[in-house]
Structures are given as C-alpha cells and as structure tokens.
Image 1: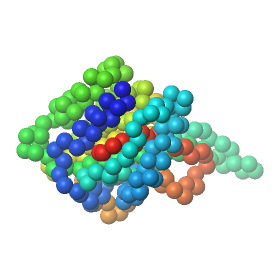
Image 2 (image 1 turned 30 degrees about the vertical axis):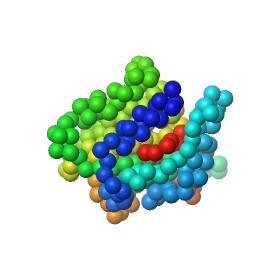
Image 3 (image 1 turned 45 degrees about the vertical axis):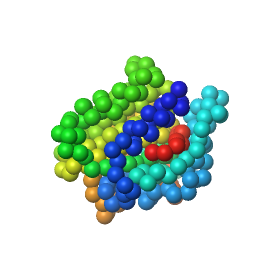
Image 4 (image 1 turned 30 degrees about the horizontal axis):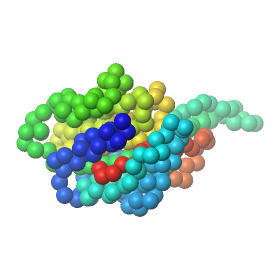
Length: 239
C-alpha cells in the first residue's frame, strides 16, 4: 500500500508542472526557515528517522526510500510547537508555558495555473487530485478540509493511519498554485490545526521580512522550555 500511495503522490505533485523554479521567490510562509535542503542523504536520513519514530515496529523496512531531487521541487525542514502545560517558576510568582517542538519535512512544488484550472474552485481541484487516494485506502480513514481567506484557497487531506499530509493552495490574486506534502508526527488532535495554520499563512510572492507565522518556531536554536521531537516523513522517489 505504501508503494501505491507513493506513486499517487508523485503524480499529484508532478502533473502539469513547469521547469525548475526558485520556489522561495514564488511563495512566502513563516514555517519555512531555510532556502531548501539540497543534500539527498540529509533528506533521506531525516525521513528514515521520522518514519522510525512514527511507525515503530510496523515500519516497512523493505520500502524503496530512494530520493531524487526533482527539478520542480524543494525540500525544507519545518517546526511546529504545541503547548503542553504551564509551570510555576521556582522562587517567583511567574509562570512559564512548556512546549513540545515537532519537526517535519516539507516538500513543495509551484506552477502557473492553466486557463482551465484557474476557473475551478478549490473543491473541484481537490476532488480531482485526491480521488486516487481512495483507490488504495478506505475513504472513511481520511480527513479533508478547506482553508480560505482573501488571498488564497487551500485544501488538505491525510490518513488517520499515516503521518503524511497532502495539500493544495490556489492563489486568488495570481494564476499560480502550490502543491506539496508535509510529514510530521503530530498527535491527530493537533494535525488539522497545524495544516490550517500553514495554509492560511502562505502568500504568493517572496518573503522579504521573514515574518513568522502562527506558532511555528525556528527548527534550530530553539530556546523554549520543552521537548523537541522529530515529526515524521517517508522520503519518496521524485516529487
């Protein structure tokens, strides 16, 4: 099943895409704290580490984990912090919030919308893109939702049995779209809120101010009290 889902994701992300792009000149998102990972071993090692944490003994150790850096994609580390409690600071009346930091692996592709696609709603585009997933897993196992604001329309889908989130974002101001995957080992109760914040914080255009979005911290040099966790990823062939 994992191989089938991997193949479907490859089709979802590559169909109709243009030549190599500097994706970070096309979109801005406060979760993205780097210009992209380029070391295939680093990406692969992170993916394996995240998979081992999420799947444990159920990890498919025979799955093909070969990574190829497709010319129309980029990989990024991202982080998301979840408040886990409030503690009293010893010797004071102050209190501090404790967090768990979840690290994830993001894969992005950008493309210009065709004249036909640009007239479709996010619901129509999503139905076309996600329907293949139901061929390999029961529809009842999936969570799907939409995010809309003045600048974008987005959607996402994930299986309750997996650590993979698939998303599509359409610009309302430009004929452009971003597609991608996020693999992160968040508790299921936090997963939808995270991806909604990610999608809502996406804008089309370069990030000149590096504004942080939502509750995401940097993935390096974290000083918040709490525990840092890696958030899952199966690395995949292609993009």
